[in-house]
Image (cartoon, one colour):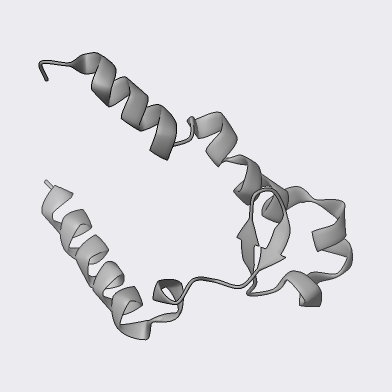
Length: 81
C-alpha cells in the first residue's frame, strides 16, 4: 500500500485491538452476574462491555446467518490439507 498511514488511521477508526475486543466475550464467560442469573443472560446480545442490547436488524436476519454459516464452512473446508 502506498500510504500505510491511511491504513493505520482506518484501522484505528473501525477496529479494536484484540485485547479490547476480548472484553465482551470474557465478561460473558466469567462475570459473576452472568453465573448468578444465567436465564437473564442466556441467548442475549451484548454490547461492550456486558450490557444487554437489542441486535441490529441484519443480526436478526436468518438468511444472513445461514449465508455466514455456509461461507464459514466452505472456508474451513478449503483450509483442510
